[in-house]
Image 1 (tube, each protein chain N blue to C red):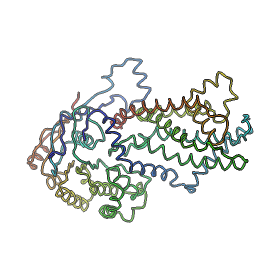
Image 2: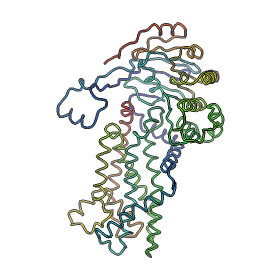
Image 3: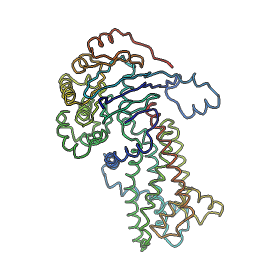
Image 4: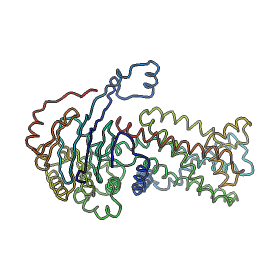
Length: 255
Length: 269
């Protein structure tokens, strides 16, 4: 199999509750008895609509799009955090993902304990974590803090540790959401080098970033998403980024 | 690996669960270590918590309401009910909140989420064990030795664990979406304890109430544990049957409900 990711007509609908921050049990009961029509209370929109693509082994793909275009939703489905409303994805191999900040650390546990927790979730076994832990700590540059609870870490330190773990596990597919742009200059350099190295080793990388320089530097292909739809899929990275910059901010794609 | 709108079929889900067994160990250890972090007494709380609770109940019910407990001291009777009850209420509260309490992890990284309640409910079995050891020590102090059928105790550990798990699976999804359920369950637990022969023996109840309480699945579990540890009464075959059937039913319903609701919840966070 050459394709490691085959996405077929992926769609995801999200609800926005119009007049309430969130729904309570009382609301459900009240709405049931007052017979309020559902479509007044709940506005639905397409976070993703009919997105299809394939990605080959070893490709390094950048995903661009405005805030709310559906990039993170796509990565969430690919990393299996949420399921699509319709359509399907066929994944060949293990996925290691690093979504948003914080990366699912437990605040009370130490950095070291969190490395074990996180890397195990990403599918690594104990022996191989033991082998890699020094490299991870070293990459994150947090030797002094490694035995303090994560809640004492700065957000930069958490991001660095998160990236260090995700980039050191053996997943065939690495998914990174908007992480590189948050670190300082040195760390960004380090990340870029690491991603290139991973890419050279034949693993597949999906990267969301608002930093076009990182995309140009790292990626050989760009998927441009707007209003939940795939508007461009090309290997001509500079041209794709240029079109993306020209695209105006789009409203939600309502159902 | 095929990702679609439906939860994965059960044989794939089981395979995934088996592959994640190391993660289960880490989650159990996490529960145990996090529980008493930043406390001065630390691990001592494992012993102190059940002891203090039992001491409070034993005192209240010894001096204020006195229940006849047959030929065993009331303190032993009450402790043999409170210790399993504490496990149940602890486990249920943790299990019920397993999605909400781990929202920061499950919205960012994937693993079979059913592993959360499965491992979270194993950790307080440590407290249960410590509580039972303490109970046996108290019994020896009163000159009572555990009966030979204490060897059946692990079966009842498994039963109370599975019952709490089944109920947690049913409640965790709805609770994560409607927080009201957690509050309602707080009251329910309070009532439930008094509807279970924890602090009083079934024999003091009028016959109709007694035959009703047998249909409370916890009656069978608590009575059986008391029978196994203290040797009090007979093995409550009828009530135990109710517990086993209820557990199987809750597990079946719970697993389906949980699989359906976990992603709904993640989309609503």
